[in-house]
Length: 427
Image 1: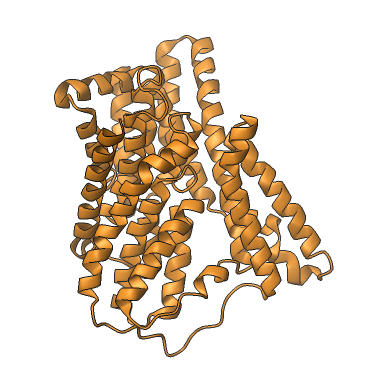
Image 2 (image 1 turned 45 degrees about the vertical axis):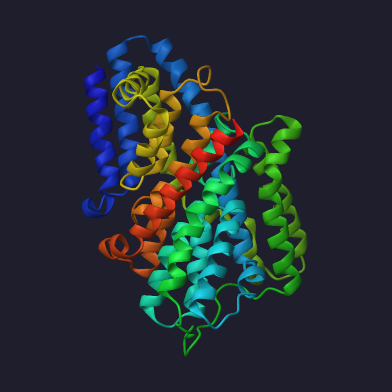
């Protein structure tokens, strides 16, 4: 049974990694793998009560992550529908590309820490289309936006899906991850930006000759600012809510979503239905990426079977015997996340290592958050932000590997050395 489970998972994993060449959506592969793995587990074990208990336990953990992501994605869609992100993007003004790169890098870095790397990438690439006319320039900026978004998402519990998974799973806590991973994540960004300053030195910003009309609904300045502040305030308040009430994060995000919904209804109550329909939270729920949500459900349930059958525990033991050093193992996991999705990698790691042996906020979990969160920047297919940028700006795999991957790689190892040095100094 164990061999069959491993084979099924490896084949499914390959299908997820080769989503674009195969032209099979990774969500379909993940769901199929989850169903097949649990079916094999149930039939081979024969203990239906045990399998049922294991499935219920796994479903509870998966549902917490899914509800949190649905709430966060809906809040972002509501803010975007009100053009709330103009509050930030409209203030970016500069004539030199080197200055623009630093500005865009830092805005992306900090915006990603309070939103998420995928949404931030979409917003910032949309901004670049308004600021830069040359497509080659936009490609370079889009690549650096991916690096900055992944670096920014790694040091907060709500900035990256993998960090959110570790946070909800109890492997990390809010203040500890922010203090422990902020400097390495910043180094991860600063090193590539310093190189870019030399590459872009002397180049001027050439804006588009024709700027298209802004999409979406017409909203007042007050409506933009209110929904932007309320949306971001809700996301930032979730860790505080968890600390005060000790309730799971998904309850905080759903509570905030309810508040945002009520405020939106009151804000637009005097408008005709045609004018307010696309500003409502009900409409935002239709716009969230349900394919990504389904992918998380499938991959987390698939990984759960490997955890309950103790395959992941055996893998952890093999890694320890082969490499013998925890830091080397985590660095390898980060590098592998450039090739395959980091969500199943982190999900597998959470099942490989026991919280009793590696307590919350230990070296393993903080370093895992950094490496898995930023390692995906090394290749365009290694993160959700990269895949989004690939589609939005038609970035070719080999172009990214040639122009951006070396920058991301030196930034990654710069952060690795920074974290290890920081940990040894403070512990």
